[in-house]
Image (cartoon, rainbow over all chains, first blue to last red; front, side):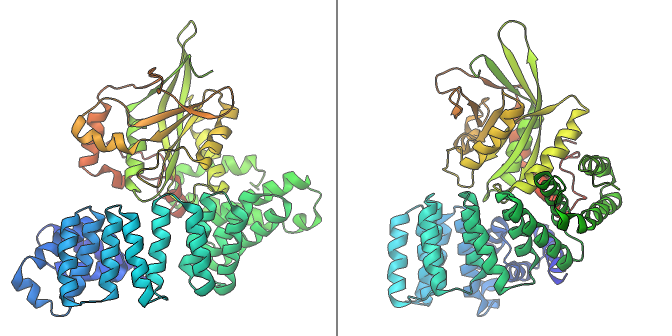
Length: 302
Length: 206
């Protein structure tokens, strides 16, 4: 909830700054904190502070952070010259810094100079072989060139060293899915669930992958993970509620109702169907007839 | 089957598709094309694409959300005499001009129910040029399934099977882009995250 409040504060601040009400420093700081991607706004307001010596001197040590932030934003908006200027200033202030070196590599990437960017990163890795961010940039370069199998290889090598990096496991799962390698994607989610057993999106994603693979055993497991998503979210996850319904229909079609275990557990889908109807009635009444008719066709409407 | 068939996209269908892709610039997006078949007498038939429903901007290769969307969208448009006549897709990478496997598979599925199914792929280069060229051609590529069951890009032999119903659609589109209308587009993914968001985008053209 804290996040939602801060996101709302970010929107308020943005319109205040946009309308000339001041507060640009606070806005830029909040963008950094929330890791929001509002590059056009950051570039505009960040640059106007940096170009104003009086405003810039008030920043103190934050000045350099702002140069970095504006450099990122400028690259995102394809303003390579602005980015180059920011990076040059940082490089003068912090000679030999890896953090600035990464920015230089990033600028090469932004220009599409993949081979040069790779060389720059390789040089940085010689001094800091365990710099995770640089390894991730190498994956990003492979991905940007559309070479997904190279990205998979790099990520797998990376995960041999940094096994606890959840973002990397998730990225690997998503690449596998875009290659339609669902079994491998499922393995990634198993790793994620093992290391963080109470994160609902991992349970949900695992269930969705298993449903996509299909087959009786996978559908039964998918249903269980949809159910655990419902438990972990207090029944608030629409995808999981639908998922339970879809799974039980598919299981029934495969077993033609013969499966004893399914019959015993058949309460679950009627409860999910009820919860869906309740939610739609309250929050999307216009769509309720569609949902009721769909559940009726699935024979889940009691 | 493809050669004697024409495809005509309505302005609202076309604009929704492009705005959806613009909202999620760093992700692949997809959606469904709704319409009907019109026999003009003689050998020619026209698929009128009247509307689009944006589906997803994440995990396009997963089945559950796609199945749900197909069930609910078909049911909704049946009452208006429209059915699913195709699929649209925009790739994740700007310079990727290939129709990917997931898109082909979804196209195959729709083809089973509607043999003249169209797959539209957003052409980033044409979209980029639109600002300066003010061209009237649609910024999408049309793919149809040929007799060897593979999806083939049409128009490469000079014939133009895809037309915009309203010739000024690109002018309106540019207007919508400059007023940042894309921020308001809601897809089925958004709906599943928050069911109060309507995938029909009822207020978009007001």
